[in-house]
Length: 486
Ligand code: G3P
Ligand code: CA
Image (cartoon, rainbow, N blue to C red):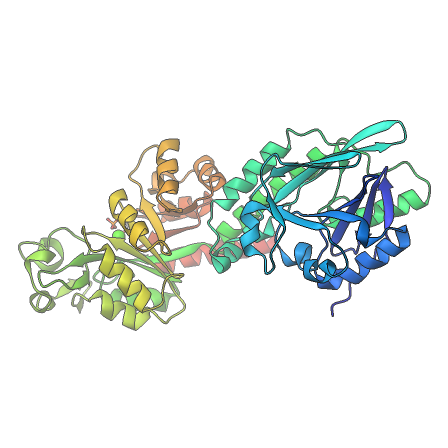
């Protein structure tokens, strides 16, 4: 079992006590009519909690409520072992109950109050870190003063990284919830910041000061606001760092600057240049096969009249496409996925035709690309249909130039679309910040020259399609080298 750094249990102020370790916190409120415990930590933390009870002279049998700030193991996993020692009612924020590995005795909703003895704990639902993260507020009498204590039960921003959200299939909109929770909590007056982890309020150092007889360091009406402001700043830094460090270069129709677009040649060229992702366009042939082709008509690319739906696959395979002396033929979606699906790549698959959603979803599933592909479209209705029939797929809305209103953002969110694909001129720092604040990933389109490419990267987007991935990758490398020099 993992060993933690003990923090000997102590009285923080009034009837509020800390038990646990540096790594995992638990608090006890002695209400005069039984104990309320907030969090227990994981099973590894239990010995520290039990030692704390003993040191303080409390009995586990007196715990009437155990309130869990959220479901994560380092706050809640000690519950099954603790339950053998107490009959306390275990309660958690309603959306988090389903994530626990054990049942609870009840759920808490926004604004619920738990009253025991001289204490009422008000519970606010403050999602972000988890969907059901709770924050707790209660008064403590310390000498003649009544002081309001507050704990933000979802104060971790790292669990909102792209990697974490993608790994657990958590919606990106949790980021928006996190910002909204901080804003809501800033309206609360708090005299005593209670840490959901010991480093939130420097519990260990505070204890030392108390031992030395100094003024109680936990009583600090400024601490709450400073803590929340710092948290917001950290979250913005995480978003900005991620945009740069994980900027997604999607070879647009492959490396289509150099090869005929949407051909295997162009896709291989893009991958060979080092692009971590490929963008392509899907249409349906006369005989019902999904193929990769951009234009509405064949004239420009194949020198033929009509469009893709006027020809069978066999006929289309007879029309070569050329660029820069390079020649290739139209690929099917299946050929493309068979060749690239098991490579470590991301895919942006654009729906160009109506009524291909079912077959595209089936192909993505068949190649197990649910986590690696984003389905995009200029047509909101195609994406809405896709969301209904394949809710597990990631969707990106291609926006035409111009203001993307709050109403549009709300509509996208309601349609399960969490990637916004604006055109280059709209990729401005204030816009990317606004969209990120709403929880969207921002992936640009329409890069036509190197100035565009720099604008998109410099202004905080998370990625872009580009016909010349080699140039963008070189620019990113250059910027990284400059940053390392600083
Ligand atoms: O990056 C998206 C982009 O491909 C959309 O425009 O016309 O190239 O399909 P288009
Ligand atoms: Ca496209």
